[in-house]
Image (cartoon, rainbow, N blue to C red; front, side, top):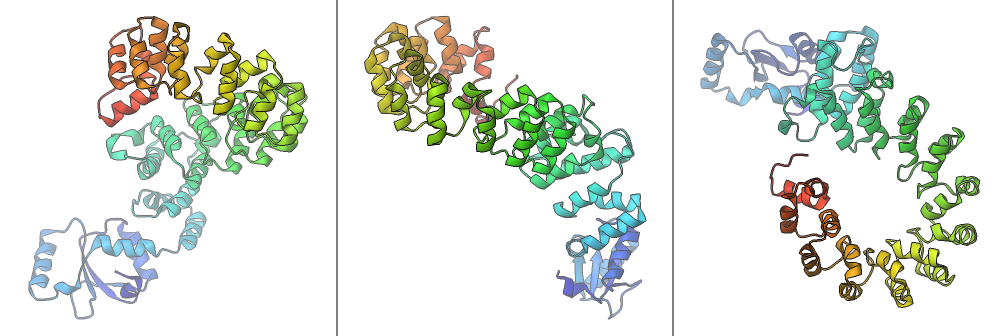
Length: 446
């Protein structure tokens, strides 16, 4: 049904509307100049079958259907969908704001057919009356409507809409910037920084990469040190938010900023004298930064994952054991640079190198010939499967523990390890194993 098919028409409704109460339904029809007939006549364009039809109405419906006007029959859901899709949102919001009609606002918030965009605007108008999400019946209904609408796979999580944990999971799973912003501006959240039951929700808002800068700034003004450090560590952090964090002049916050690869260049220059080692290890390098940290902090610079092959070669050419040892642990080390380090023949450094995923398979197989390398190989996700299986039967508990953590350890081995109470927790923390459990739809208890 299209809007033009409905305007200026007359409808005959049997039963009651579904998405609206009777008063709101009549009001919305009036805005479209749609008349409600008391009985059937040739002027009726649509015969609408609503909910809660009485036996008398059902008889009348059946009679009209048999008399050949069945082409005028329409479902209440179809009619209401057309009405809702064409509501003037600005006029509705203004009307609700001026009238402060709480019951009308609640009816729209609980109306599942309202679009998500309009819903988020409606919920911003709701007065929580200085109470929490579940502290009275109306607040509980609004919170349940919010969670039910946006929670992924809500049908698999019975009653999650009635728990604070459900709201936390909703924030954790969403990538919708407008949803996070709307939740963040709800008064229970804005007033809940000292509320231990709401704090996990605020933490998830701070962690979520979709959280807009306006919300991050609000969190910085009201949040504690933990929240500030979380924000300082976020990927692709906006320059203005970084500057706001810097002006706080808090050491732990500055350290978190320095660990952020997206640290702004100008801020890095201001912080590099105070935190040279941290910045050297984490900043996205350019030639200028590389030359600077090559002089002041080469050992930490060698751990930086944005080093080019040429930069790695420069560091290796220093012939400094500490720098070379750091370079051997770099997960982005160039294969040829790794080969050069192996040729140096330093057994201690090679132990670190054999834990590195960037080392060539042929070098890992050669390392297996020497028992001193077993622990390093057991923890390396690039160690060939046949070697991992051989290591599993060495019996050394530290090697077995390393295998329990290794995402490349064959699943059948992990099942065996899980039978040992000493290893059960380590296996449960192996992400590859837990993903296998989920894929196989097998229950897992943390």
